[in-house]
Length: 543
Image (cartoon, rainbow, N blue to C red; front, side):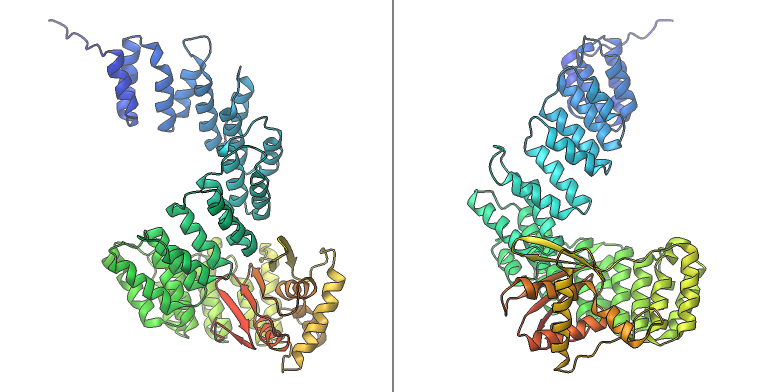
């Protein structure tokens, strides 16, 4: 019997096959041919291909058995980068390198950032002998990803001094604008916009999307719309950013109008677009429009509702007092509801003082996994507290203590003279806290002249009325506003960002303060904007 001769592949052919970045099934066949034909010079390309298919172990075997004295620096960097994404042995590989370059340093920096070791990453970044635009992008994006927004802006400011001879790239600009958006740092964000124009940085779609988002989240929806209006052919990301911005400002009708224009322009919406539109309907009480979009999103645009869409839809129904219908939607969901969905429903029960349904919901949650239960107890506790049912509050909080659940601490940020100041509820840490509290007491007395009285219904502990008034007086946004009174000229607009939903007492207080002191106060809470002017709020008390 005659044996079939083996087919020999030329080096050029094998190289071309590897250059196409084949899937793992084909890559193994090519690897076999390289072994048969002894094409050792293709080891670099082979390592690269295995790393691209996330087969790090095979790549490391090839790397450790490199057929020549030492792999080139490029291959070392590829291995470090792969390990940095997997939080593996990037540090060990780096230490073994005979020669390192800026790509080596940046790859290891990425390993620290991806591992969440931002303290180590920051120190390592300062020690890097050379940095390029990618190094700066990795550091700044890492800060943003870990919620260290002020630190991200500090690095961007350092880069902007032009002492490093590094050209700012798109990724750096987008991350810096994102940090401004999170902090509500309008002055800094406007400066970055000017920096873009001054330095001739091309306004790509990503940068325009980030600018729209920044201006919207910093309370200047007019500036966001000007950026959007200058785009000749907006893409899905531009449209989505504009729609989401209008929605958080409670401009549901405008959000629907922009959404309809998007459809006229034959731009297909994505999951985030639909979420933005639903959010706009929710904050504007546009129930019918929200119903149409939610129930048609899969048939019309091929978008299957995700947990975020259900959460927004439940919020829409709950705000509009359709509590039983909202509960029915949650129970019939095709996916397991998360804490955000339950929070939306229970918050509606608290706002509309429906204890019966609130108890039913918590009993239902009790039959689910612990992840779904997380956060429900504190909402029920607040509901009982608002009705003065202190025995029930005590029982719920006793159960909470067993589970060791912690609620979010109220925190607010305000930008004054280019610096970001943070305040927590009942803050003791700010260096001017005594002066701030004195000013706050003075402001609240003034607010009382137009009928403001502390709303103590939602204080979650059985305290005396005087103690309850003190508790609500020291909420973080009130402290931030008192600091603004101390630090800015009279009649200057005040902008505050808060991590939680604005409570009813703060909402009433800020309306009164805006009237007595002739100040425009703009607050962005967890879900939307509130613009207080002349004793009224842009939300029309629908939030």
